[in-house]
Image (cartoon, rainbow, N blue to C red; front, top):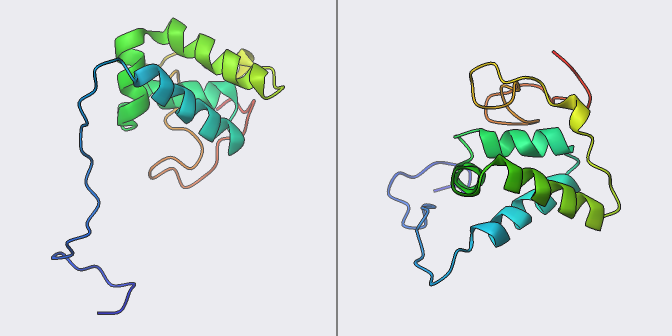
Length: 121
């Protein structure tokens, strides 16, 4: 089978697996998410949108367990560590989708376009 063809019998298919731990590892995981997306060029409102979007299971779980205040503080702390100031002015009001008005962050599943920092639709 050529490497670019899909094989439904592939034993190396990616699967997520929960790993039991003795402590709450969500804050460390959340910090990693924030740093990763910030380094890819996402602004603070775009990173926050990830945590509001149920399609991003990990970030969404962090917000559900620790609250949006925790997530905002974490985003601010990570951005400041990298010498960046989070610009919260670009956050749009929630329109009932749970994403702060953004249908999805830049390059999100099915977006077809990149949401620019500071862009208001």
